[in-house]
Image (cartoon, rainbow over all chains, first blue to last red; front, side, top):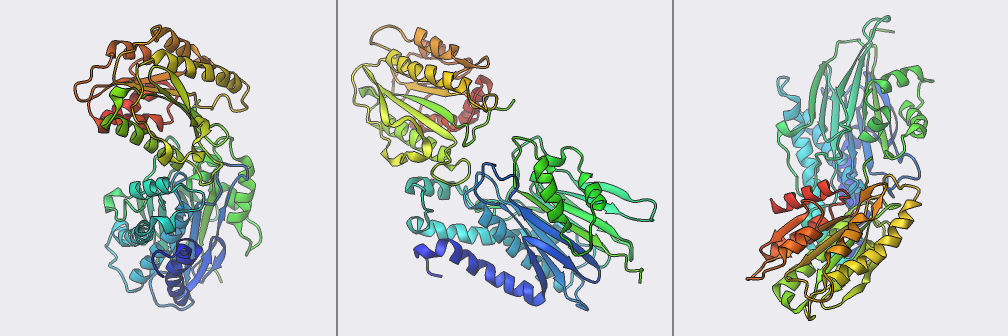
Length: 319
Length: 223
């Protein structure tokens, strides 16, 4: 990629930056990108990134999500890894930032954890390098744009405003959430305002629900990775969790961006109830089905992109 | 209810800029920079697209008279090239009243339009920003015109005026009058050029509608 080439700061440049990560992840397992279902020997699930109500004040879906699943009989300890990102509304090209953060962050996470990790390392310490990799990828793109503002200036943007945006680093900013499964635990790391909830099915008669992370609906302020914030400290993560998994004990984890949090309001467990009550035939994208239903219920004035990841641990004791 | 700018309900920012000869040089440069950065910041808000302005600009230059800048005549900010906005400080006299009356005329009919707006309850109120380094010295005093503006309201919420007295290099602005023109706690004393630019850009792009929020924006700028 040559700097200063007017063609390299849009799709072509992004394709180059994503391709390397995509090739690596596809060689290491299988991918679901933005929308789809996955199924492995240990878990299954679905994800969807929906634009949301059509008449909202956005032109792009600034959410992005990826799921990586290990191949059958893969000896590595990491079995599933997902990334979900929400580009900031007021940040230029944040949809590109969200995509790049997911690709770079997920690749870093899977690659590092594939080589083994100490079980006593905290979730935050395991997640930080992936978040930093996401920040570095975004930072490199911003640096390349700033190297030649004239060539990188988006159509319709005044040159002086674009230089201002580059100078104040108000572009490509995004939240990032990572979730991954190993044999004995699920791990969740959130930088930003995503929400997550967990259902442990336990016995047939009784399940236990809890909100792992609630979206803070009281503020529009949110932490984000971006050109001005390429590295984070572990104690800056909005949420870290390690949930022990018992062999053969099924569970469900739902992770979503804040758009869905505004629809659910203060009841972060709604998504668990709705998913199980609507559970259709296997193979259907339950994340997509639920979002399609819920976006019609979006309260006026809170329209946003909607993204949902559903991960279900299998009851591996059943035959 | 929160009054928040959106494409369907952009906020009108009225900048009343002292362009008298005493503002020439560094002050005019700082004022130009402040207005340019305000426009750039306002352009950066909201999704990309030339027709998705979250702000509109009414720019009135005043010296002995007041004139609306054709680039900023209730213009959506994404239609304004910031580099084309320049103040030079080349007029004689300081007629703050003329600027306020000109703004009042535009705001009166604008507020009437907002009464019928589908999103009236969430529509941001117009914000008036005025800065001057001198004393009003042409025609009738400005307080009556300022009061007219502050009596304009949307659902009982009045338009806010933020005022800055520019005291750079020995200038002595009429702080008493400017404080009376300003809404409560919305006056700021400006002692250097960078503070003038910061006042215009940060308060103008704050998106604030209510006096308390404008005052908070001023405090934040001062810090």
